[in-house]
Amino acid sequence: MSPKRRANLFANRLQHVVEELRLAGWTVTIEDRTLPSGLVADFVARRGDEMLIGEIASRDTVEHDALQQLARLAEGIPNARLQVYWLGDLAESPPLPDNVEQFAVEAVRIYPHSARGSFLLAWAALEAAITHFSLESILQESRAGFLPWQALGQLCSLGHVDEADFSRLTHLRRVRHEIAHQGSPIEPSNEDVSFLVDIAKRMASGQYFSVDDMVSWFLDAYEDPANQLPYDGAEGGYQYQGDGPYDADEVLREEFPHASEHSIREAARILNGISVDWIQKPNRR
Image (tube, helix red, strand yellow):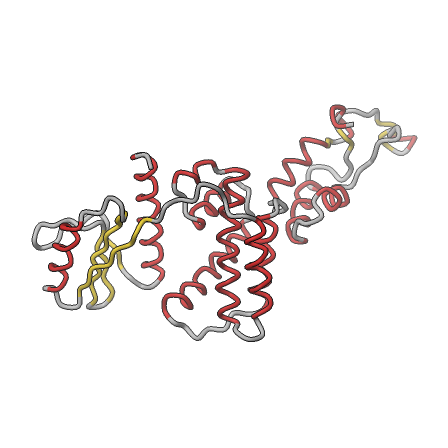
């Protein structure tokens, strides 16, 4: 692994760990992380009277002496402990869609027996699908170390994931954290599992399309008839010659049959605010 790639992986792993700890109620300090003995940790976290000394390390380059010094230091501080977060090797290829499908099917199957187990399996399917979706379509930077949630945030900021989906996934991420890391007895709903499974399947199969993606595609292929056709009020308006008018909602449903109902409606609403009738652009006929 190149030094640049390792540095990117370290930075992204650190960001992910800090986010997870803050979700769990820890106050995390990255800037002021010098310990009483003069040793410097990657971060220091506190929750109540607890103290966590955090290190991000790679098993093939780890400095064992430094970790042992930090461990001895933690033993001498009341309610303190050393926690090492290991860097995993990056996969050379994205997860296979078939693997996502298998996890999704299992998640649905076991829901009647274990809602929490079903939810965690569905989340695993989602993370694999996000990685596949980002690597295959948009974010080549993901190969430099983006973790799934970070990639999802980037995709949302670029308009390739809907804000509504991202908002709900943010809530479900907190649920997942409470179950996986805090042993919460919370029971995820079947609707929540179905939502995760649906997005995972669509991302893994290349059938997830955001509102922005659909609007962009439509405006590249269609335009207001005023740009091409003569208008005759006495003859009923624009003089179509076998092409149009097209309805945005109908076109989107035909072109994006797997997009969510909410996304199609929102994309059509935006387009109808521009024009209620459309005609194909000359280069698309």
